[in-house]
Image (cartoon, rainbow, N blue to C red; front, side):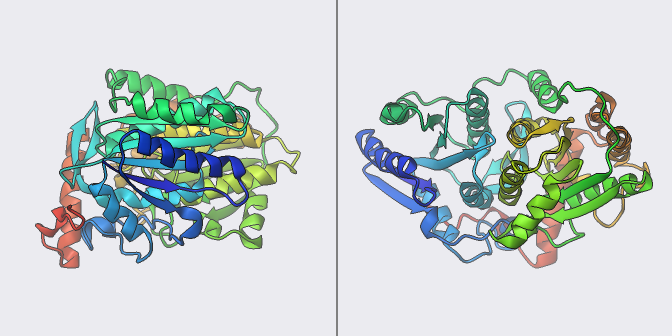
Length: 442
């Protein structure tokens, strides 16, 4: 059997380096004769730009020519894919997530229903099992549970036959080998705990629920972060953030608009952006969903904001607006759990989450300033949330409820999405047959 390991061991991280070596030995003992190891600390990888060229322009291949080409080539040939690295807010830290975001070329753009929700169709005949090994400084049950839920969601979307997680911590180094062995021996079926969509809806509402807190003084400053890596003004997230900005400005609040692309590199510029966000009275994140979680650039931004908040003695509110390309908002439930964990780590009051399914109806060509089909529910939610946050309150339940009632039925959205991808391919000169290409077929 063959295994592919994608690992990130931060410099001088002795414990994770030991886990990396243990993983190789445990895989060998589990019967994996060949292990292909991609150490992300030694590779230069670009961030996913969210333009879907790997589906409609160069089907099955990311257009960025770097080490990710070899990673995606190796995965369809493997029997197991193992992701290893630090955990950030219950998900993968940004370096690991950078590699994960660019795996979408391995699946098809077209939609189908599986396990009560919409997912993409398979591109390849064979996909490996999916294992995630995460490390925390100390045991944290909430982060461990969120990390396992993310592995389950990823395994469903990446067609893994079996899945598993091992969450290790700095206080129990003697349990590392046993934890990895248990993960490999006790593999789970992806989606095995999903009962129906109603159960997923309850999970979503719990994740979106604001923390209990008394109404505070009205805020004066708002930081808005656009989570998309697309050029400024060309994404649904930018459209959503712009609508919030105009609402807040009309109520006399000072707004600072930031973009995820400010966090491509570590350095003074990204630290300045993080401090600017950390100092605001309200922080609104408008972001797409990438591979069931926050994009790598957003994760990097939140890591830096959390670090900056340690020196900021301000009580602020945090609101994530997560935009999902699938019609069901339930897909955002795990990412919302991660944003709650970020709020806890950074000392924010979690003022409620806004989950949007069917985000393709939001187009940057038209603003979200008036209620019109098919975005009336989005405009209504933004208005309700902005009104509440401007007065020092949490996002009202009516704003979330508005997003749960989109204008388009799920089946119609899937149909229009499939047609949209075919039209994009046609406009780019890509044949319909090429859309199902398998460039890395063993």
